[in-house]
Amino acid sequence: MSALALIDSWPVENAAVGVVAADGVLARRGNVDRVSPWASVTKLVSAAAVLVAVEEGIVELDEPAGPPGSSLRHLLAHASGLPLDDGAPIARPGERRIYSNAGFEAAAALVAERAEMPFAEYLAGAVVESVGMPSTRLEGSPSSGASGPLEDLLAFGRELLAPRFVAGETLEEATSVAFPGLVGVLPGFGRQDPNDWGLGLELRDAKSPHWTGARNSPRTFGHFGRAGTFLWVDPEAGLACACLTDRPFGDWAIEAWPALSDAVLGEFGGR
Image (cartoon, rainbow, N blue to C red):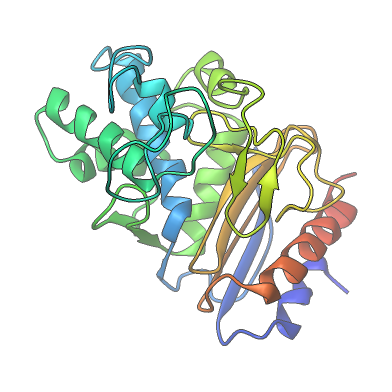
């Protein structure tokens, strides 16, 4: 049985999943053209747009941004001290890993101000059109407001395996630990010590429990969303796996997603 057939037993009404390598799609299952909300998977494309802005010289990673003492790098790495949503800082910059939608909104606002256009418009040109994601839209928060079909998310996964929208060195920096050693809570999976994160990209490293599989390498990066969505990229396996569903993240996903990830790596990891 194909690894992707596991989604047939999930307690969801609609699910679509696919696996890609840098040279193309390896397998798909479900309605790959159905547009779904991505929730926090949005942070991956928003972070990508900020990285393009860095390469274009519009912003700098280490310039002040967010609360006093914070930089754009802190905002992308959930290390600015800002809380989940609006409000005053609850820690000093660089002190803890506090997952923050507000931090992403502040980062996007800086890019929008410097680019002199709405962030959604900048993201559309810098990432969506560049990568080839014709049905993806950002409407609302740059932390959670994107929607699109699985086919577009798979295209983005391929891009993260072999980037063209930014230099390889830029993506390597984004997938390296920013502010090493910070403790924090990984939403849905509890306290992690350390709770390693790159620049907008969550890093698997040695986290346990985790939403990826036991077979995923420590270098795996990506994000999952409350809408029942995820994208992971495993550079060592040379694979990316994306999933969209219509059931919010919960206990079902904590059990189902790692099993799917391990099955995917078991089937396609040695190709």
